[in-house]
Length: 564
Image (cartoon, rainbow, N blue to C red; front, side):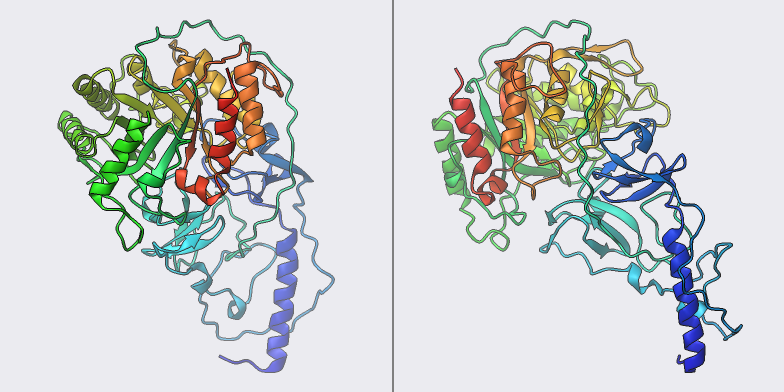
């Protein structure tokens, strides 16, 4: 529809005035339970704040902007009184016959003319394609829903991403009222243009505190696990390429001591049955034959390497809701181990695989079926394969260290997955070879010094690892989660910035290692003891390390080789 020039001039002038008001309007209010991307501006207690890192304000955690300077930059007092731009036309009343495409809720200040109301076409994006590469901030549409990438990704189905996955659900495609990222959107901005400002770096300076937790005696050391004193653990993209390129098993660097084949995935989320398939040649043109793959595994094992099957990953939700599902899990995992001649199992359950039922408040005696049945399955596998069976776990910080502040079985209003790995780790502590918590893709976590720690720096790794080496009281319970033995603990890291959020430079990683293992180079967080036998490092992934010119494996292998 076309309008006469005079009418169009009036409409445009009104639009300019409206934009001036919108620019000066207060930012949306901060609210618990939402994920905030770096650069998001919110208001809280009369001040505006800018998010410094992408994070989730977990319900009940009280990670409000005023209390977490490592997450939010104070921009000053909120501007709640609009200051219109100098262009203040007095338009002649015009009453066209509107055909509104979108009818935003008008504010008391401005009533937008329907003819210039934004159309919903901008709330749909390019359709997600499994073979395309997406970087943080890019948006796609899949099955009628819009998603925004949190970091680099390829092949990760947005609908299966989950709360901690790479994709963030930002509302339905074509909706006249798009689902906002922030919980209380300003109604004068019906279709905001995504902006990702570069956050101003802020270096928190918390008061150094030396935590004094209740002394806990670690579980006695079992027999030798056949691994070196200090190890590098790497995940190998064996069933997919993920944009970093496929690496044949025979070509995996000998710098790696433990190689986790990624991934065996469930046939359905509750069946318990898992399956492993080598990468198809359509995705991995250089993939070897199955016979060559098995022969290369044996060759690695002949050099003292351990090769495991990793179950789960970001897209592999496994919920063992019944004993029958646990039996199916044991049988299908055993079939994979036997077929490929593997040394054991890595448990990489993410998403909604584990959670605690209400009232499940005894870490030593859990009652939630998905946890009870997983423990049963792991004990069956250990009994079947004996003392040489290698068992590792790679939970996210949310499922382990967050249990110090919030425990899903006891807290009211918090995510019931908080700390949900703790009963599993406790039950398997005598059989657990390695625990390498993912110190990445994490929100801020409270350490034993009762300070928030944010990923991507040495202090974060020191604080998170110290919790595992000292033990801690589980929130809302009287249970003291016992310290793990130093040789059971490794730090989980992304190999480069493409591999995950919270990438830490080689220098900062080794600063953390020096602090933990030697008692030197500590920053604001200072452990009360050093742990020279701490086991090493894990990374996602072997492939991303090669993509990054082997920086992770080369530099950290040299570091450990130089240790006594």
